[in-house]
Length: 501
View (spheres, helix red, strand yellow):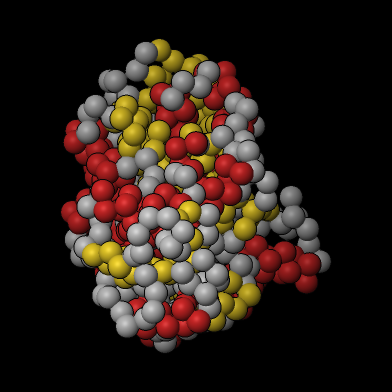
């Protein structure tokens, strides 16, 4: 609980308020026990932030927030509502700062680490959390797999929550005894200011490849959004590890040499590198070279070169932050598979199945190449593209699938408010010859598509289920209907009287 005047003074001192309509100091200043941007979660003593979004303007719900017991408004426009009001030009960013102030800046009580990049954020975050736990930290996590407060997990609607929710989650972590937190930082969140109130001790930049250009416009703007993590959200002396094998993330090292070092699966001077690598379905045996020495005889327990990159970035950052090499080595070797990320199964009939979140051209190409490395026979890929998202990637993903897979089933992947058949046709336009050769088909029912691919597969083949990963739903319009790629595999195996190895 905090007086509104305290929040107003803090925001005013930092130049975030245009006008204050707030009673003076003392008992007349209303109390604030919560900051909310959704009127449905307003209760007594809530500061309601009127966020103007793409489809909904929170100013239109100020009256209802008043009826629900809001004590004040944070708004862009002064409203005819009988509540104290704080006016700002950037409600979304400022509401996170207001929440951080109210909760006592919980981020400052945690070893706070961020992971940003187009692909690999979730795997890298899980690796960081696991090793920090091995080092004795009670470590929370926020990202695509949900929110873990140190004791239990909870689902999330967005990879990086809105600032009001983010600060509440960090405060809950502190209350539950967490000493560290690993957070995925999306480009949308960075541009929209959702990370306001957070300064990070360390960060990993996994890569920057073509994605979200419907929102950011150009690759340069997309890269600039990712770079905001280093430019605006690092503590003095904060450590950054950036992937040198990707041209955009490599630029982080050149732009911020005081903070950033690189990592690479190739030999590079002054970087964290892999050498003597041997890849298998169980993981990667290798040595890790560091700028000051090395860690020989390391086993990275997740398979695939792309996972080796993710694990190397995580390991390098934790070494930079002062963890003992033996703790890092043991953490890498004791990892469990990350749900929905290169999750591998084999049926008793000898059919392989890989479940992966790959939903970008670069990720699909990477996972198909990794799948080829563990497949004796054919690769059958099942994938789609999300609706109301970057449309230009649709035919490109089809061309990649055509080049690297032997059979393609195009299906649904969160069509949202677009017509599923229209999305599928845009994907299929990238490979018309594949349909003529009977190498590709469209089955919009994702469960049917998965069953069909598994039925077509033979011993030695691998079926790659791409795009959904560990998600347990498909979004149609504003509805989330239950669906699990893993559940479909398990049900198919049960129906066919097989087992899984």
